Length: 428
Image (cartoon, rainbow, N blue to C red):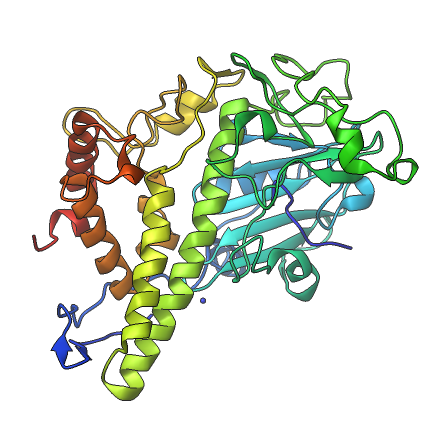
């Protein structure tokens, strides 16, 4: 079985001599990062008797998990591509539901014996768990490793460390993937018309449409030239779907939606989570070098700068593919997500949507508030914020930032100063 979510571990350092020079001193006292992820924290609360999970006769532990982990029901997206630990249960008539917040992803299929959980580990890379759907046993989360990592640890797909995967594929009529619609994982740079193959999607948009809601009427093994076959399929035929009634039994699911805007947010954050894990791995290696030798080599510093640069480009939506707007989902996901803030004194937030040409009004990722980002090594965060300051202040006005006009840079700068203390206290 493939362990793919298919949509789908800190150090104190001092000033570091480098090649006869001295880098900017780093704080000797680093704010403590959480030592465990959200699932281990919940397991500890369960074992201490601080919380109990109610078992639903249809959905099992899912509703209680959504509540305890603060994962909004409105984030539900539905995937009929046969991936993950639950491959044998997933099909166009029984899609897998995925729910998410800034740190946690839950995967659920009707009548499955397990709930799948993936979490952005604040002291490592992505961590994967299962929870048995058994009301006769106390809920115990089982850490998954080798099975999931067969797919979830890939240099070409997740960047190296264990991570999250969002792919767009054409499936056959049973939901088995035939061929990807583009190379690698889907992210903000993927053309809209190549996204969401293998997903149900509810929402409105202009043309060209996405590739959701479409699967081939044949069996995978019946097609030898799959690339040629895909070229003949109208991948946009499933666009503009506002309701899924009549396609499968919706009654077991938490909502009848597979919201288009939720899918776009999921696409963005899965990619950024992977870049955060990559940056953590690079930063940890650099700090280990400092602890052992008392200095930081040029190559290690360059590696940190490179990881921070890749993260900044993604979090500032550099190269974002234009969206055919206006775009709208079908659930209350936009309101629920945007309402989470935080907000500056003017009521502005990085969670505020645009949905007419680009995803967010202020294109700077909300994941700057996530536990995964805030627990990055201080060297990485300092490098990141200084480079971010270069871009937002206009000192770097190169073509990679052409999508950020002066007003947008100022707005993002002010929002960050009001809501991210570490950015506000940056030495400039």
